[in-house]
Every structure is written in C-alpha cells, then in structure tokens.
Image (cartoon, rainbow, N blue to C red; front, side, top):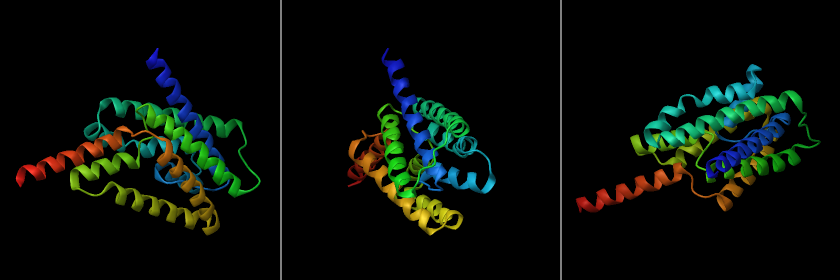
Length: 210
C-alpha cells in the first residue's frame, strides 16, 4: 500500500511540473536545468517539449546509475517518462496562455516547485543537471553549486537570445520562486544525501592522513 501511495505522489508531482512547464512555455518563459533547455529547443526546432525532455535526459541515467544507485535511476527514468507524456498531452488538449508573463512566472514557479518537492520527498527526480553535478563532483571534485550555476547561466543566456531580455527577467522571477519553495519545504533528495556522504568520506580520508 505504501508503494502504491508513493507512486501516486510521484505521479502527482510529475503532473504539477508538467502543468507548470506548460504555463511557462505558453508565455515563452524558461526555468533552469534540462527543462529550461527543452523549452528553448522546442522553440528552435518545433519538436514537442515532452519528446525533447525525454531525449535530453537519456545521457544522464548512466551517471545516476553509477553514482547514485539503481533504485533512484529507475524512479527518475519513470518520472521523466511520465512528465514527458503528460506535458505533450496537456499541450495538445488545453490552453495555458495567461494575460501577463508576470502572472505566468509566479504561477509556473509555484506549481513546478510543488511538483519537485513531491518528487524529492519520494526518492525521485526529473534527472538531468543534478545527476551531472554528482558525477562531476565525485569524478573530478568540481563543486555541485558551481556546475548548477554555470549550466543555468548558459541555459538562461541562450533563452535571452531566443526569447529576449524581458522574457528572461520574468523567467528569473519564476526561478526564484521555485528555488525558494524547494529551499524551504523539500526534504533532502538522494542526490543531496549522496553529496553529503561524499563530503563525510572526504573528511574521514583527510583525518586519516593527518
């Protein structure tokens, strides 16, 4: 029963993120990570967000499998697949256009943030950049925060070229709201626990050499 309940919340989280993404896409707004990259590429290629998001995440599963674990990787793969399908179904059947991009940024940021909280709390994610952060940290000692910041700057920077400065400024409001919700309400994800574990290992190794 707990297993069914867990997947019910994961599905709900995927639905929330899919709805939030559709609001953002309808107003040419973006967020960070692979979802933001998917939005930009959708505008450039005409391929649906769901298809692009699924394809973009494929290379990251190997990193998750080797650095985080099989269970988390499987959950993330299913979550990405669910969110991709939901996004395309929503786009094909509903209109998400709102009268002002500021309203879209606030609403989209809140909905995506809520969805990610449910995913993190039930041991899943939507893959992508977080997996890359863990991989680079463990393999090369690159700080995850720096990786996340650099990739988000590159993605938002590309969105500036595609959508314009004004749309990106509105997007930053949505990103701020989303990250604020995550920082306040989410429990640590397997990625964060893995990072903490690596830090503890590094401290122990340093202590043993002193």
